[in-house]
Image (cartoon, rainbow, N blue to C red; front, top):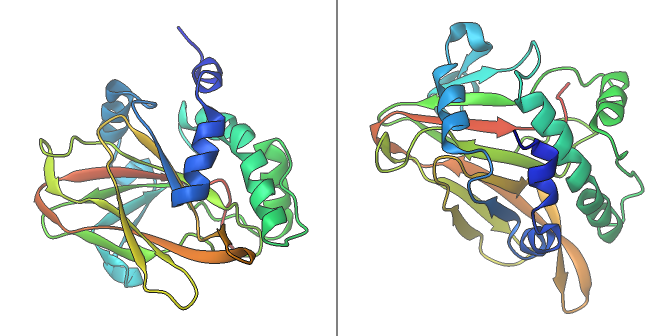
Length: 234
């Protein structure tokens, strides 16, 4: 069996970084694979993690299941491997935005720093959205130590298991209207997205732009999704 590190090593990371710089997200087609996505979707149950309704937080309608007890395999291995390859982009963004903090090359070192700072609540979660369910625009950037990139995936088949439920992002640049984007995710795809802020090159140099993400209303069926964060919340 081919290791996930080998699969990641075969990707065009320079091209992925260019997409992140230009759009604030990059889709990695088929990276998760259909069978793994389906296996993760089948694992959603109240016992899979802390259940939170989106209504309780004013974030929409539906259910979230947080991985408070730790990510299941192979997601834990995936997260560490993806972090190693995204840390360089994250540090380049930090420099462009004038931030002094630099992310360590290994995820565990960053999580240790998170814990020392009091960030111990898991942000990574699975979502389950039925008919009329949706997620409002939001950011997963609570706390002082936020990794500027995160990973999202859809674990059920658009157009087959559900209709609607598009993954939506908005980008707000200073003195400009918000720019809407729809990430065309299929079953088995993965997208790397900006968590909240990213640098944008303007005529007079780099400045920060603000991003949020959401899931549009599910019209038919049930949508299962994944959000994988590299940092924890307070």
